[in-house]
Image 1: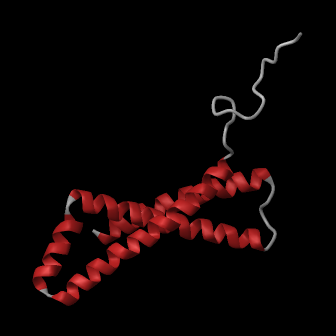
Image 2 (image 1 turned 180 degrees about the horizontal axis):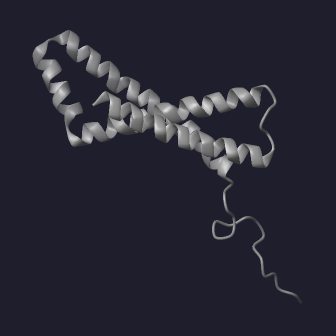
Image 3 (image 1 turned 180 degrees about the vertical axis):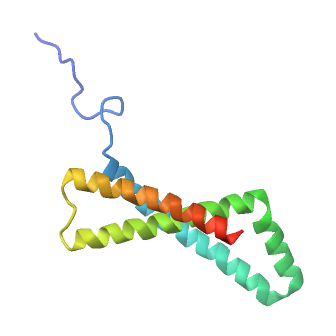
Length: 125
């Protein structure tokens, strides 16, 4: 009787998730983050309508280190989702499906999103 030396199905210790799969999952996660961030944006805008006290409180919350970290993450999610959405438009036209091209465009998306996030924060401060 022979014993098997490999798992019957992909296992977390053996299976390496493809880069494009990670990007696809990230696209969905950033979509949810953008929805949550839109609620935060609505809170900030509503606080301006409620008067100086409410606006000052919102500014204090969003101006804290935790608030800035959340806003930075929201900005990164925004630019990543935007860049990856543009990538998907090319896919809709039937371009970039080959593995090498998909990996290259994925790396371009991550790089562009990082650069746009940093630039937005440099010019926004």
